[in-house]
Image (cartoon, rainbow, N blue to C red):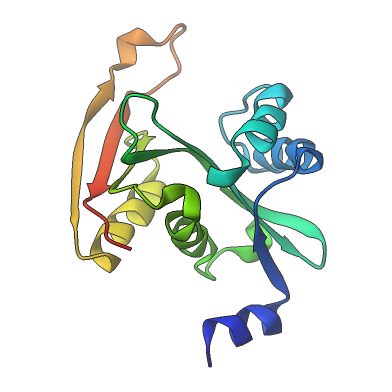
Length: 169
């Protein structure tokens, strides 16, 4: 079964977000217990960075999203800020498929690397990014990005930097 046929059968659509999707992205992030940014962040990402963000809808309802942007200092690198997948879609490879969609975008034509930060306890995201490296037969370098002492308060783990690449389209 081709990917297109499979997507049609699942009734999932992969697209760029519109500003109207911003609040739905915020609501999904809140529902999932992700680090909740202000609602403005999701509106801004949808409006100004739609070329490097992905939304997935099932029968018109948002069931997944990626917020990402190309790093200003490194135009060969796309930074994935957040990945959210509704619990109804878990186990279907939706996060990996969204990353594939992102990498294939025209806006990422010059991108050779994908970066993200992940906490040590976030096994799902670590597996997602390591799988992306394996699938693309490339390296996945992990290093400390932000140490625990940089965060205010007492409840934030360090953030590890995952750098995948080079990626060839």
